[in-house]
Length: 66
Picture (tube, helix red, strand yellow):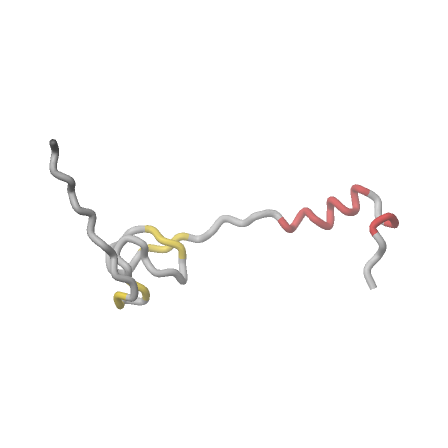
């Protein structure tokens, strides 16, 4: 059973929480377009995942100048 919070000193509580900090996310290169993306996710630039297209990406349409 865990120790009640009042029985632990402040420094012991902080030392226990020291390993819970945020970690940086690893970036990998997309196999199709070569851009840096988060691992295990579809590429937001070309829509591919593991070498096949899984998301249709709309192309940007240039607006005519007035």
